[in-house]
Amino acid sequence: MEFVAAADEYDRFMGRYTRTLAPALVEAAGVRDGMRVLDVGCGPGGLTGALADRVGEERVAAIDPAPQFAAACRQRHPAADVRDGAAEQLPWPDGTFDATLSCLVIGFMADPDRGVREMRRVTRGGGTVAACMWDIAEGGMTMLNTFWGAARRIDASLTGEEHRAGVTRGDIAHRFRRAGLEDVEDGELEASADYAGFDDFWEPFTFAVGPAGQHLATLSPERRELVREACRAALPDGPFSLTARAWFARGSAPA
Ligand SMILES: C[S@@+](CC[C@H](N)C(=O)[O-])C[C@H]1O[C@@H](n2cnc3c(N)ncnc32)[C@H](O)[C@@H]1O
Image (cartoon, rainbow, N blue to C red; front, side, top):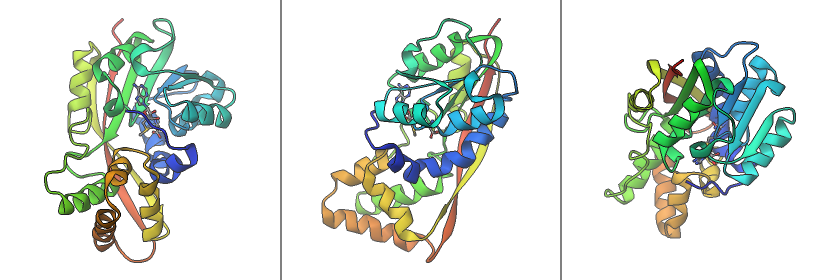
């Protein structure tokens, strides 16, 4: 899926969750000082920054097909090797990295299984491949669950994001095993975001950053307002925080 929104719009919509999700992914993947690491689908660089905090920016590479995101990541992390490109065709030789990570990307790849195979290929034997995607199927990502629940009150037949790769329990681990990764383990990661109030929650949906905002943009102004009101009714008044659960898996590249 193509992301055309500006980096600062992404920050306000989803980047606010990456701030807590990315360090949890780095920890769960077992990234340690001295490793050379890759961030696949880096967006504006939330995970890139968390990896840089752990191993140093010059040991981090990153890639994203959205040119405005890759440019923002490059600007924010000037010592990292940031490239324009897609997971399905990574521009690094076999076995380049000790760990290859991907945060909230598998579900947006044109060919997720090919993307995972490429992540495996660029990881040295015994190195780690790890990824996470939001829990859409069981509603653990509160922000998106609130939005799609409101949108379905207006149109019960709506397909949300539940068809995407990685959004059901165990799916990432299944794909990892199918790609030949070994010792695959899976689990959950917790993230959260703070909102100053309802407007701070709603406005980023109008930026059309991801599938939810892009769906909203297809609705008439009257239907948009109905979705907005249904979201407002589901959320507290005043400042609030929302939790978000992501499915996670890690595996080892075969020797
Ligand atoms: C939800 S954002 C996640 C960005 C970042 N990893 C984060 O956690 O904030 C999804 C990202 O996947 C990228 N993407 C979409 N298709 C991709 C592909 N085939 N290969 C790599 N990245 C892709 C998008 O451009 C976007 O930056």
